[in-house]
Every structure is written in C-alpha cells, then in structure tokens.
Image (tube, rainbow, N blue to C red; front, side, top):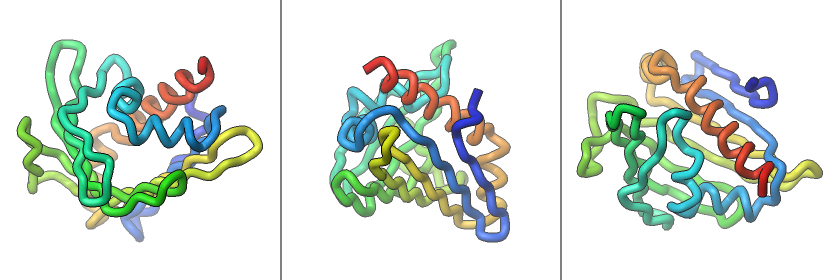
Length: 163
C-alpha cells in the first residue's frame, strides 16, 4: 500500500512532486540519502537491489550505481550533486549511464530537489523532479518510475520503522 506517499504529476510543467513522512529524525533520514552503505539498503524496488560503485557526496561529486535484478541483470545510473544544504536539501541531476558511469545521452536526465523537514511524526521528505520535457517525463513514467520509487520509499520507511 502506497496511500501515504503523495505522487503528483504535472505534464504542463514536466514535473513530479513526491512527499512522504518517515518515522525518524532528519539526521537519520539524511544519512540514508548520503551514505553508501545505507542508500544501497533501500534505493531499489524489491526484488531488485542497489549496488553503489562510487559515492562522492559533495557538491560536484557523483553517485554511480547499478540496479541489480533478481536474475543478475543490471541497469546503470548516476547522479551529479549540484547543491547540498546539510540536513535541509540535496539537488542532483539523475541520469542513466553505462557500466563505467558515463551518461547515456539517449535517455532522460532529471533534476531532483530533495527536501528534509522535521515534523512531529519524524521527517517530511519532499522530492521535486524537473524533466527537460514532457516527453522525457512520460518516458520515465512509462518505465515504471512511479511504482518503483514508491516501493523504494516504502523500503526506507520499513527500515526506519525497525530502527
């Protein structure tokens, strides 16, 4: 059930807004976005898993990773960190890549702004995704992004609920 995840699409602005509240403080949720050993635990929708090749969590740094399927298939991707405001927000450009981390220019690039806000229940996570075009947004959504991202966020909620 994903009823507690807000996922709004706006084709006119080629953007998506996602919001979810996690039962943990901002520092804990932040760590699950900024530390390799933690992000690998939840980023991929099950039965897939995330395998980080490199994570340089600094402005201008890059996160290179593979989504690894149950049969060993791999989908490579990466993110370039554009701006990091400690415990407040992360701005990155997300892209598909080859196994060496080189961006695949035939696939959409998505600009993400991830916000972390302390609330009574824990941490409110907001994610604003800005696509270069409505066509790029449709392409990613047709690949199952909405369902996959909701599943990944629920992985994180399950982990944090056990902490």
